[in-house]
Length: 509
Image (cartoon, rainbow, N blue to C red; front, side):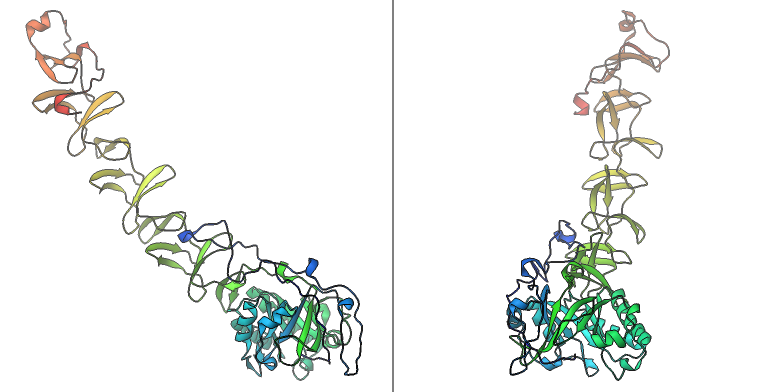
């Protein structure tokens, strides 16, 4: 980037982004494995307030060495100070830079047609030192297609680094971009910036005031401007960032370095937690860091980002637990028809096996996760699950026979007291009716399965006495004539009632 001979006296140090962390976040959302996902709110920390660069006018003070100085009393009204660096600064000590009243760094991405060999090191070390990062490319584009290719070059490079500042198109090369008409230049700029914006980054345009006035059709440009003007303050009204010098002096940088001042607080504009789409691949950034091999929550759904940073899809097994992720990567919960049957995924996304209570009903999923229906035998007990998989309890008519399932859903056998009456289910669980011979005693169960107890009744030409425990004996004629009267319908109680009396002895209950 172009420059004039300038340097700056140190100003009062800024505290930097409040509470910024490039690797951690907090959320009340608890998801898979008890992890927490980032919210989608975005920004962390801010510039401004008591930390902003003091206001005032800029005036040129020329010393014997021709050095332009801005004193603390001649502040420039900015909210933060930064540097932009490229191959020419070589090895930078970013910890020292950060200690010298620098809060952000704009990094060159390309050098002589290739990736700037210092970009990766600068990005890693500047971020570790706590600086906000942006990036720029010195453009040689002369067409919309070339601008889009340059954008793709930048996106492929920056995606693995925690950028929290704009991605910039540097418009200044007179031999390429400068040969176009102002309208064509604007078309090239817009093509680059739209590609950057569509990917999920924040685009910006760098130019000096001569280019702004003469080489770019600014009526076609709506993006933020990074304006280069030396010796005096910029005059362009839409300036978001000012490059005030390329001969500044900052600790940690050998030789001259570009000095920049910020007038727009991107910490409140560029989200820290966001999706980006680059070369057809989707990535999620949490506190500006691409998430890899991790669960994330984008404020609406859970996703698992694989080792490449892309959302996993389909079946996923982690730590012995199975999850299912839809085609867009979002984790499913609740019921889902998959691979031949219904499956249930709990609130953490884990595929359920065994018993699960869902909306007031119990369901059973096999070891492979498939919901079961019909008869089920598990834990030494038998259950019945209807066509929707819900466990049945109470009386059920199955295949023309009645069964009784207790409150736990287990099929019962033997004597069962239900609704104030006694019933008997055989070893297969089928409710019995009619005569029952059990333990050397006879019982009578009516058509509904209820046991007679404490009554006298006629059956098959005989009079029977059902004792309190339900056991039945024949009443001799003389006993019957002694005062019981009688009914002749062959199956009607003569005295007493069908009041339940707990069987004793043979029933063992």
